Image (cartoon, rainbow, N blue to C red):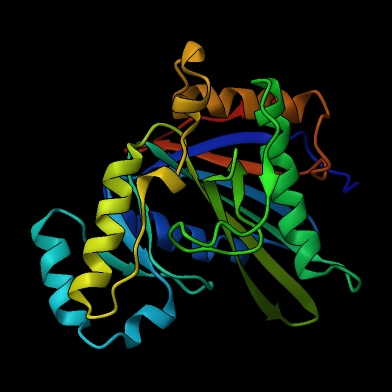
Length: 254
């Protein structure tokens, strides 16, 4: 466990997904010996975040025009994967840390997946890890319920001097409509002349899974705070998650 200040929960809400993605991709820049771990949670209006491979599709300009006309601006992230829709009903999480010499890609993925699983367990849910091949942005660290994708993980490594830095990110569907997310992704690839089916039946949300809890992003974050405070995750003991609405920053000690 990393020694340091008690964990803080800082939630950031942005006016554009571009601003949120920029904040996430700059997160590792604040790491160092005195701050070896940062955990960021953010929300923003809807957008479709592409992987670099998507920028090489046959008709990207036509896809961009179609999606932007429908209210889905396109962004490109520096981590891997393919198109992933985000919006008010989704929660973006980024865990940035200084990686020890023996720290692996799977260790980073497992750390964030374990954090999410601990919150899921508080709802009585047992998350599954493994590729959801017919969902959007499939990957072997997909998180699912009953085979339906709930979250996807991606990762970016950086080197700064003698420090290895890794940021593992998750896009979690808390309450967004799977039909809307699937339609966005299918529309993008169809107009890009690279059709990929994405059925809403391959997607899930926490709100659907436990309707009796009326889950929102705010409620999920409170359970995340409780999980960190109670030591129910393997996350190191020095971390931050950021909360900013407009110019007002709130810090909640766990």
